[in-house]
Image (cartoon, rainbow, N blue to C red; front, side, top):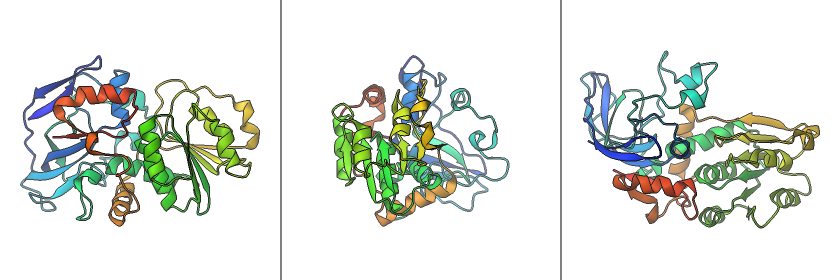
Length: 338
């Protein structure tokens, strides 16, 4: 099977790997689409993925073979590669290791994931794709679940105002989930043209360009001088976390969703007297995937603002896609067709 294997030093190599044979309690999935996640871009940019790794964890496909012990699945079932409820003892390290460190533990060696044509998975790992959810949306279920998880962990309530720093895929999904959760006002900060246009298309209340406007001043003014009730940092670059603390209202909440790989300076004396609360949101849990799928099926969550015909790339073009996403301008989301 074809696979894009990370070689190290910001290089992918298209290689021919053995197609996995499913064990009796496994299914074999033919991957159709795999979205490129920001964490994979970080792994590429900072050269932290072990050489020989096949990245890609936002994918959907179809079951083409089932193990002899499988009764739940059949050949032809459309599935998402993940989201299943792990049985006792199979919980991921991020959930069961009390000292989990993503920087040092997040990229195990030798893994084969969605930038390969086929993946063998244990019976419990995938989840079915509802009839009303096309493959293009199903491939975005994992980041949608991340957005659902963040909003559910936050204090967003009906009528609240929400500020979002960064209109990349996660920021755009968080905006839609916050709207569905009852936020009365959603404001976004984003400098790149393509992502500003995407934010405007989901009818947020304001899209602020930080290179032209003062984000804090604009968001505070739009909330009657108070600041938003909750601010999500979906950018995670130098200065954005401190900016979020400066923007949020007294006793409001800042939620960090982005995964910063560099130190984030803060000037706490500027805002700590307002007794701001802080929360980190990491990944998702199985129930979040099902909420995301239900929102997609009902039309409350759309990937249309994130993707266009130009979003799809062939596996052979993955190197150029990653190089483009390191410094996006017109790109919002890119998806690999296999």
